[in-house]
Length: 124
Image 1 (tube, rainbow, N blue to C red):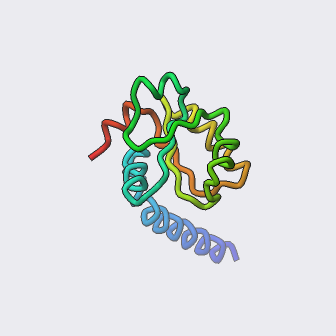
Image 2: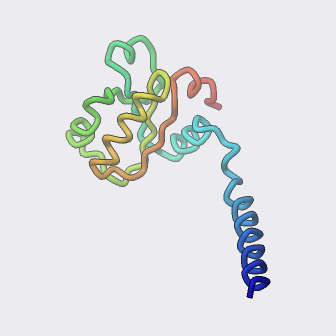
């Protein structure tokens, strides 16, 4: 009986390693690279910084929606809950906060593109 458990454990361990290798194919992409892939596929691009920061420079095509009013603005703009959206800010912190608020409100396809500097540098 103990040998059966050992064999089952080895099979389970081997299976987990095989599936882990398959699922890790995308782990080499940075969040910025994923963001640009989604933007090129038509994702809505949101700058989660303040209006003043946005005015000082932003990614072309981005819409300025500060993180603290993201849910209200998405609702006012009638953004579909399943619309693919990439958010960024100065460092990725405020865009992360916006994503938490938006997920709580039922938005599904959200990606944190990180900070403006890194996201801009990753553009190809």
